[in-house]
Length: 116
Figure 1 (cartoon, rainbow, N blue to C red):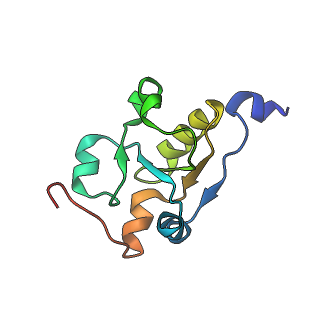
Figure 2: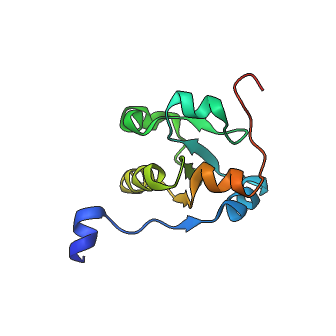
């Protein structure tokens, strides 16, 4: 184990937002966990995503199936990277979405808003 791996854990795979969108339409589709705060989520999120803010992730692991691949998204990819490492340490097969919702929206990909 390298020094960096001992500090941060093993690197977690990541995908672009277009690759993430393709994964979400595959069968079986992965679970999509959005680790932003509720107000961010309400402003726009990916349809079908589950909101579990990063600060609550450890206490809410039981809400995430262990038998499916997990995609993790946040606003820019930073918090989701932390969440992905946490999930990987807990034994999940996890992928971080690079660029997060900022990249998702800049690519013109569909979002849902609160009540929508």
